[in-house]
Length: 300
Image 1 (cartoon, rainbow, N blue to C red):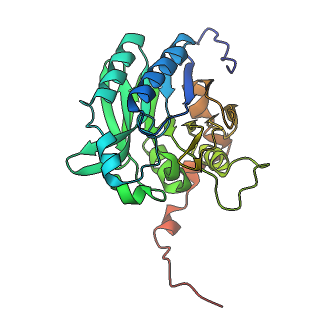
Image 2 (cartoon, rainbow, N blue to C red):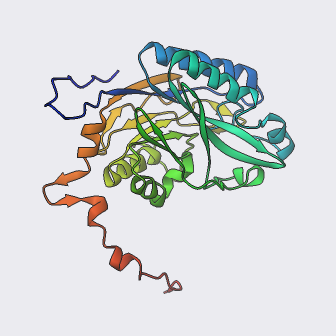
């Protein structure tokens, strides 16, 4: 567990921002074993809450597993949100433990399936995020997200959500930052990238660090481990602070693990000021960006 900030007496009239302990839960999810996956997620949430975590983030599609072999299989595992049994179990657990939970789920809405994440607080269901950018064979089963980038106000700051491949798009983080998000919760199922050297940090972690730094965001990445129907997953869950440096992790590449980090909103928001002259969001040249156009590619 990362060390927490030492609290002192605040000057009169200054709002005190206590540290918030966040937890990224790294799970070994099993395809077709939904009841076992949900039970395991509840046990890990309980463990994280027992260590003082106020926000607990679980992996992408953690209730069902990821590598579906057909749309009928995916449909059979999907549930409605928030009235399905998985979301209801998480809602009850959040209320009992007094925590916030952000967890990946296979969502069914009518005849459509979504790679989604539910956001739950101690007082109940807060909302759903649906993955905007689908990866690989997800395109065979899921619809692209249609809820935009919602944000959720909590006593621990304003939360945003992104899922896995969403993190390859700088616009996602920038739009969340523009909405005043403090903490981005990222359920993910990272897989090896083309030409990835296992001796080097994962591309996903590098992208998360760059996004955190360039937007002044805390990012909590909860990955999974294991091999599912031949597909390996990378693990290495990570919590990145608003200055772009890891606060916790990377976790192991192949073991279940919970990593913890303390986040202080006052310090995080101050980190957006890079020096006396520069704040990235303020320094953008929007007068130029609006007139930039992408032309046809030139081939040589």
